[in-house]
Length: 222
Ligand SMILES: O=C(CO)[C@H](O)[C@H](O)COP(=O)(O)O
Image: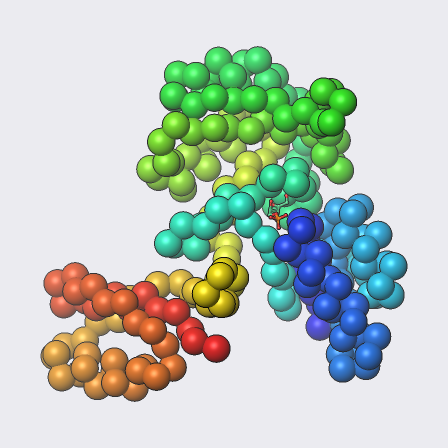
């Protein structure tokens, strides 16, 4: 099985657990595709067999942390500054002053990310990062992502759209799984009720009726 090994304080727990399962023999036949130097060091120290993205056209599973998630499972990521290895391989020059001016017009502060010494932070792929502080939520993340990506000098952005299929949320009340919304059409209310009865007990369902279409937004229960 080919696993994407990603980076961040949350992802580090997954890598630790993976190493423990491999070392105890509960898991075998795993190869990890690393996305950063940091995760490579952690995985290597735990004895996890490693490979690189170019050697695998397909990953069987990749789990990752996120800074923010919206109801469509679109994510904002990149606080650790390592999104590039996961999304792109292009590199261009960036002009942060120009970006700042541009985003001011959009009602958004753009700040060049600095390291602990106050110097521009440089990613594993030798890029700079401009953090965008929006004063109001991004209304259309898909259009926003396209516009940002199209800007000359921008290599990649931290909006991970249509990529996550399941979100695991750990909180004070326990752990929940959240999947994509499921859009289901039924011809009659009886059909809808029968389908709902089949789901009950396995999932917690939130319902919305949109014309003849019922939207099931469900959380799987452990
Ligand atoms: O995108 C990322 C790295 O660039 C991280 O996955 C994201 O910032 C979440 O980090 P953490 O798990 O440390 O809260």
